[in-house]
Image (cartoon, rainbow, N blue to C red; front, side):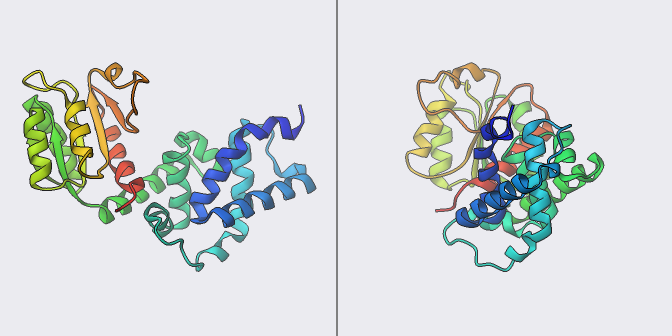
Length: 258
């Protein structure tokens, strides 16, 4: 199989990654073209022992890390809050964060892409998470009818430096709380205390404001029907604390400000 056949399916993802890394569509695409030209001129720069996507991203970062510093002083694109936030992360933590958050790579895959030990990758991801948490502290609305679970979520939110404005147990309470003070993020269950729907509450809230939402539910199938827009962030109960923390950081990071 030719290089074109092997790596072509992963080029759209590489372009997405490159644009996020550089903060510019034009510059990102230029770096992808540069990497591909380098590959054609010297195929040995590709590590054939790795999975194709991992090998392609490793080759690209080899090009970026040799010249990418030249982009650090370029003007950032106006009006793209996530791109600006990404560029404020240090270069290596930015790479690790995007490979994980945007491309869904595991620490092992990131280790192969970046040529760093897994322990260093873990440290870079924690550094990026800490920087994001510090910059994006906000107020939170929790929609959850089980007091113990609500308290657990409140504790996780507080550990990240956010503040909980309200814990709502019903649709009516949730909408009222959101209208009283616009939340920076909403964490919502699906089945609420009085039989009302957290899904309906969220849709009503989103009708009046733009805010990121994470659903934390024992009934994920109620959100994965294909009948209406599905949530970008969906965590199943029982949840792992680290998964909730990561989802909150990513939801806030990639949410575009008004």
